[in-house]
Amino acid sequence: IDFQNVSSALLDFVYDNRLFMPAPLIIDGYLNLKFGISGSMGLGTLITETLKLPDCPIKDVASENMEYFVSNVTRESKVPLKEAPMFVVSVLNEKSIRAETAKAFIEVLANVEIEDINQVDSADYRNSLLAAQLIKCSAGNVISFYRWAGNSISDDLARLIESKGAPTDLNAAKCEETGEDAAGIVGEIIKCEAVSVENKKAILAGCGFKFASFDIDELDGETVEVMLETKAIGMNCDMLEKFKACKPGLEIDYILSDLDGFLALIDADSPDGAEWE
Image (cartoon, rainbow, N blue to C red; front, side, top):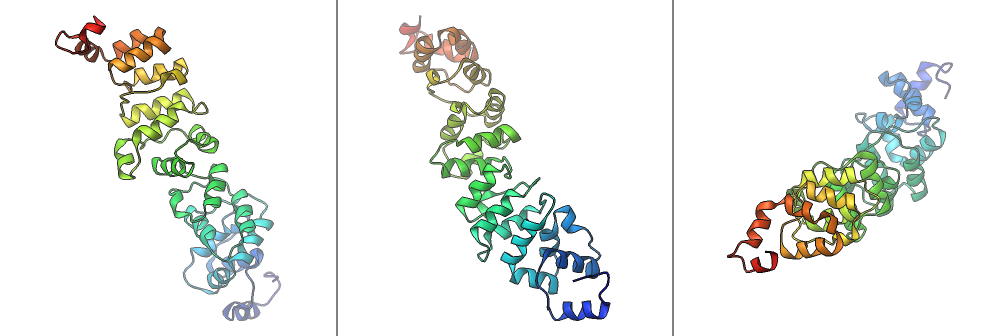
């Protein structure tokens, strides 16, 4: 439709009778004509501006032909799509949209963060969003991807933590709320070599979790030092033995991280006292 040269009466007739397909330029033209919303196609927000409209021919035609609409927007857009997260989720959960269209749609998204990945129905689409770093790095999302990866930290999840920073709300309370073992997920993050020491420190400082035992022989010295600095390892004879055997250079640091606990171990009344005198 040539919105510049076609009569307004014809444009209104086509619009009122829904005699148009949701081609991007047609939708863009009618958004401008009927609602004064201009340049959505050029801004990468055409889908959002369309789907957030009140009930009207533009929204109805697009909603009834979502595969056609989304595939054409994805193919014809000359800029990355900056659609609102709620409408990204709507598009990905739309049953009429083919998998190849959804994947292509994800590939052209930019500056989008899905708040709750559990709102996306498809496991394939969730993984594609994670790979594209289009997920908010929140405790809930990290826990979900950890579970879906068989209680492990995938390369893409580690990359998300690295690029967006450690989730500030990953703590014992959040893990309990989601039915997750805090020691399990935090422990896997600590063991993950792809997660930086800085992010490990931030997670340990924020979660307030203390391990009764940890396989420190698998860790580099910097990571162990961060665990001691954040007092993330409890004081007990088993861990003293591990430090002696695996990290002798950090045994004193371990003792100083909880001197009162160490003194309690060597107290004369302690059954373990003789061993540590």
